[in-house]
Length: 285
Image: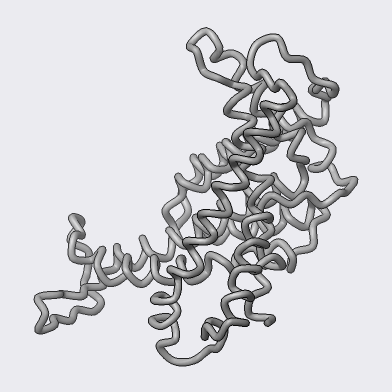
């Protein structure tokens, strides 16, 4: 049954208590720093630039006092998707390469399909995977070092200036908090359903060549009860909020008040300087 232990690999939405600088930062400062880091990650297109980004993200994980192996474990659930994305982009992006870069490999098939790998498509594939890895790690650092309540308050306060434009800041923050809260719950529900199906004779856990084809066919008896359970949980949550006379939006107060400290401004300045360096420096390769 170890093949069904998804909960141990789902790290998004979990909070790890700590006393590091990142833990003690204001949630608004961490959200603004995340935006700056995403800007830097999505703007670098060179090999060395992305290597520097990945090393920087790993250093940020260590600096935040987080166990590196535990954080990297969060990549395992999305690793098959990243692999398929890399293969498809590598094989097909070269067919639509407008730069005319040198062709590294080309293969035509009897099914009117042409696989072309160019220098530009290879670079694009590697850079895309590095970007996705860095984005996942940066997001994990945010959720590991910030409580769901703090993250909700931070998002709500950052969106408050948009109230004149009728942006529902409180509702959006609440949706984010609920989504993060139920990620581990859905993973636990998926694990329970797959174990139940396996106990009834469904062949889901064994490994082997081309096993993914058979497993894809058997997704229906897993996905359907998972969606039904999700809708049932959503309905129970709605009824519970209505029973407690929940009213969102204007006029609500909060127990914890956030205040930006000098440490937060210093950290934001450091992240802004790092982002400016990544945007302005021309990496040679």
